Amino acid sequence: MISSSATVGMIGLGAMGHPMAEHLLAARGALVVHARRPQPRLLAAGASWAETPRELASRVDVLLSMLPDLPQLEALLEGDDGLLAGAGDLLILIGSTSSAPAIRALAERLEVRSDGRVRVVDCPVSGGEDGAIAGTLSIMLGGSEEDAARAADILGACGSPVHLGPLGAGQVAKACNQLVVSATILALGEATVLAERSGLDLDALWNLLSGGYAGSRLLESRRDKLVSGDDSPSGMAQYMVKDLGFAAEVADATGTSAVLLPILRNAFDELVAAGLGDRDIAVTRRFVANRNTDASGTRTAIR
Image (cartoon, rainbow, N blue to C red; front, side, top):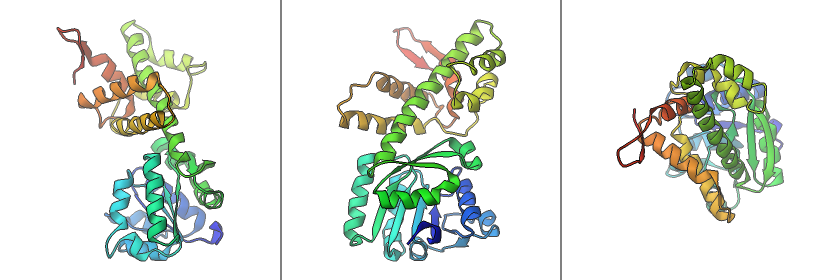
């Protein structure tokens, strides 16, 4: 079945998933959804509702999961009303940031239990809530050539999907992405504190530096927050702890003695321990500004 005629379903309709569902619905004219809470906007736009995961799986050829991680998806697979109970030939697109080995292990279990009818493509995304709303996400695909081609055809409505290799390749790419993002946002927060304490005009500074090598999409999207100190929840900083853990898993698997990764993991562990994990990642400015040295010389963070 070609993707253009495939029936598509979706679970995980949160901050990222909901706008992606809107793009899929607009592009395809139909979408089957299931969620814990009612979805009146999607239904009003023409989406169909499935009462249970089993019903959802029975009605679709391709299922996109934008749930937070694999445990949430696996909870919906099992039981009389689970996805597996209703699945025929089903391609599951896993958009969460997850462990590459865990993705491969899940795919192997699903293949065995379904006699090869259920297959998996990993498709983590980058671009944040802004990218999901605009339909400009970078979408990292891992899987067979055929399955990844189907996934790319469908997910093109949400951004730019690129096939990077076999199953799990998308998660390795996302780990690399999060390594760069975490290093960048920590540097931006720290530089903002240095500049502010030196009496610089922060707005003028970042407007100037954005035109040079310090410029980035991340700076573009977080510049106003860094200048104003607004770190109200958006892209929650605590997710970096999980994501950097997956990056460390890749480093171990590839025998890479990473330089930045251990430092970044320690920094975001400290940030979350300071009670700042539910804030936007621009909270790195406040995190750096609030760090103190206690009497023993140990760095601590205060709220």
